Length: 308
Image 1 (cartoon, one colour):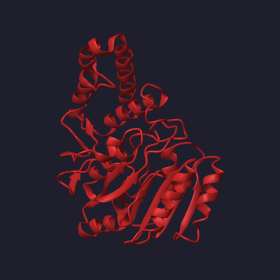
Image 2 (tube, rainbow, N blue to C red):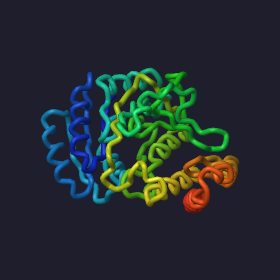
Image 3 (spheres, rainbow, N blue to C red):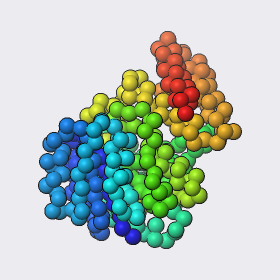
């Protein structure tokens, strides 16, 4: 069982060194490592080139666009392994990461995707790295809303789930021949939803998606140079995030669930992106500024739903 690693990177020069060192120190080595460097990022290319004689079959490719999806698809054209692993350039897999992934595939031919926990290191939000374990990880609820919690770990681990997190994810190539990430996902940097696209494709093909607490990466949540900051709640990055979620809901949820999904985000929503009822509840707390939040949430998710 040969394994390839695919990692897009863009102007994270300290992070990519930490990642490549972590890959070098794996208990078993990858048969192929593919690094896709973003446009005009010469320094990252120079850094990765220093590992050519350190990592087996290291290939360095360049993406013409500052897009995670485009970079992933360029990398998928190059990978040759039976198993393709993904992580982020600001992550550092623990030493037995690949060994743990391979062990699960070896035990079950029906596993199409395998991944696990990312322990978050974020100085601005230290509690993320110490969250209690969750009962549910990476599953759609009755309303089609996706619960994350991958960073917390799961009380029922190892367990079958719906969607892994892209920073700690792999898939069996024989389950998805000629798979490409959907380039309709609006891009400029790290598009939200690539893992949904992959894992839903796996499950639609009749294969399972497994999550295990034993499969761990340390996730440093570094600054995103493409300008799509994680804390951009109401700017262009957030608009793209909501658009993609609406688009993927229309693409992957069964027809009977779409009205429930629409009712959930348009009526309830969340504190940051409220629906109508949530906005009414928040009105005494937030005052008039809740109205732009409501408009923003509804506008871009509906646009995504209609685009699919």
